[in-house]
Image (cartoon, rainbow, N blue to C red; front, side, top):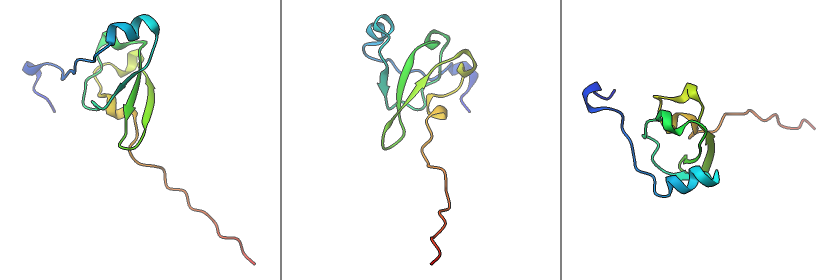
Length: 84
């Protein structure tokens, strides 16, 4: 939990203005960056350790971290073996 007097953690994204104008996704590895109200409607490619996961920011995401919407682990699926 971050102290309230520090404010939200924010990383400056190079090319943010061009991404807003051209509707291009912003590739980032800053999973701990807080989603700000100015990000609503933007598309991010958030790194999960292996790939970049597409994330489109909505109003419900404000105040959360970008990394919360890019899962780092795969779901476990049990595979049945073929019986002979």
